[in-house]
Structures are given as structure tokens and as C-alpha cells.
Length: 368
Image (cartoon, rainbow, N blue to C red; front, side, top):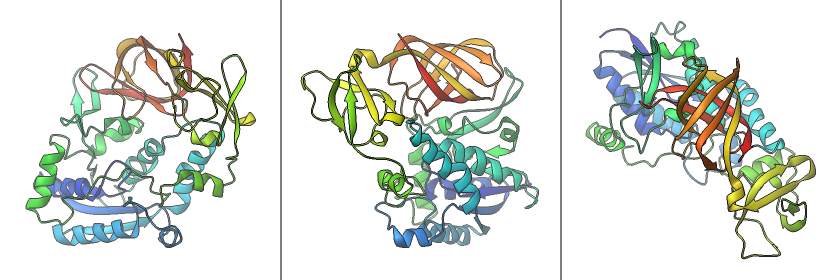
């Protein structure tokens, strides 16, 4: 096939060395020459001060694995430090979202700015044509939309298209997803056949900049208030105490104590960070008819459509009426009320064939 590809190994929270390594191998099998890129998001010294509780991406051991795999498969690996840029774009965002009482999703922005942002910008420097990633997704040209699109991979259990929905549209034509037409089990079998010694590694699920996976400790270290505060019901009555608003997200039940009536199931309904208060409500009140999403990234242009919308990475898409409000904002009305719409998370819009139409940050939920 010819040409070059950058197989860059940022290894975000949904990808391990198995997927990236096999993607590199498959790209070579497709006829590409390979240049590996491993982004270092935080200094290795951080991992000495705060040891990993579980294996996470971008750690010193991951760098070692990347170098070993590059040697095994016979391609050059470039290790690139992005500490300051990563802090400005990802870590500061993570902290500020919690300050506002939101639930952030840093992997969405990491993909946008680094894995499929900076990496694509490096193509000219490396005299390469494409960025290849181990994500389970498919990029193809769509006759229907007359543009390159990203759609779900064939393995629904490992589909990672949700995390790709915030990539700049202009970069999509420069991306390859060699793993998208394989299942996870098939990818592991390829890794075993290649004797990569990482075939049985578990997938990383932690944040790369918090080695101990203790985000509460991390936020406290960054001067976020985590003191106890009041729990209120919908009428404004104080009915309990919480352990710090950063410990909660919309829809959550656990961790709230001292309710006057423990027999009623109560969920977090609203977070008020400036007062360090949490409002809770019965289950039926935490179902919402829709949402407003801002900073919307249109991968396919639309004005008013019927489509499907996913509000969290582990949720299923739900049928909805979706309307463009302005150049960067949409309104989503679900055909049936949906549980725990969470400000700060991302709403990703798909068509019925699994093509991503776009994504935006949930600004607020719309009550039934």
C-alpha cells in the first residue's frame, strides 16, 4: 500500500499496549512503514512520589513496554514529553470542572488535543501520512454524508467511538483504526501469535495523571474544598450530610448518610459547589427529558434530526430529537426520559448506522 503512518501510543484510559501494538503490526501488514510515538503526559518522578495502585497508561513501565514492542516489531519509537501542554489542556480542565460541580471526561479532550490533534500535526515533521491508533472504531468515507466519518467498531463490547467524537473534523481523513474490524479477543490472539508478552494485560481504566487513582487526594492537593456539607431535599430541608461535593455525581446514591427516612431511595439531583451543598431527590425525579450540550463538535452538519444520543461512556444510545440551537450548541429531547443526565459529561450523537454525528459537553439537563 505504501506510505507512512504514525502509530502513536498515548495509551489513554481506554487503551493498553496490546491494542496499540497490534494496531502497529496490522498497519505494517497493510503495507505501511511505521514510526511509533509515545507521549509522556507527566514526569516519571511523579510515579516515584505516588506509586501506582494499578497499572495505568503513560507510566515508566508503559514507556518500557512501548520501547520493547517497537524493537520487537522493528520500528523507531519517538518519546515526546508534553508535560506543560497536557497540564494546560487536561489537568487544569479536570480541576476546574470539579470546582464547578461538574463531572469531567478528560479522555475526550486528550483525544482531541493530543492523540488526534498534536499527533496529526506531527505528520509533516515525520514525513508521515496517517496517525494509526488501537481504538476499536472504524473510519470510512460516507457517500451519505459526502465526507470521512468515524463509526462504531464491530466489537460492541469494546467500542470506543464515544471517546473519538470530539476530534476535529479536519483531522479525520488522516486517521487509521486497524483494530476496528476485529474483536478484542481476536486482537489478543494476534498479540499471542506475535509473542508480544502483553497479550494478557488488563485494559487500563485509570487517569494517567493520577497514579494512585485517588482523585479526591489529587483534588485536595490542588486546593479543592472537600469538607463535609449539607444534603438538602427538593423543598430545601436539610436532611443529611455529605463528605464533600467532589465525591458525588448526578444520580449517585452511595456515600450520603444521616437521612431522616432511610427507606426512601434518594439520588444526587444537583450539586451546588459555591455552597458545598448537594440536593437529592427520589429516583423518579432523576429522570430527565433532555439536555443542552454546548461547545458542540459537528462531525456531520445537521439542523434538526431524529438520531441516537449517548450521555456517558458506559450508557447505551437512546432515541432522541436533536436540534441545532446555534453554531456550537444543541438541544436533545429523548423519546423516553433518561436517568442521570450529568453536566460536564459529553453527549455523543450517532445515526442509526453507528456513525458519529458530533459531540458536546452537557451544560444542563431538561426536567420532565
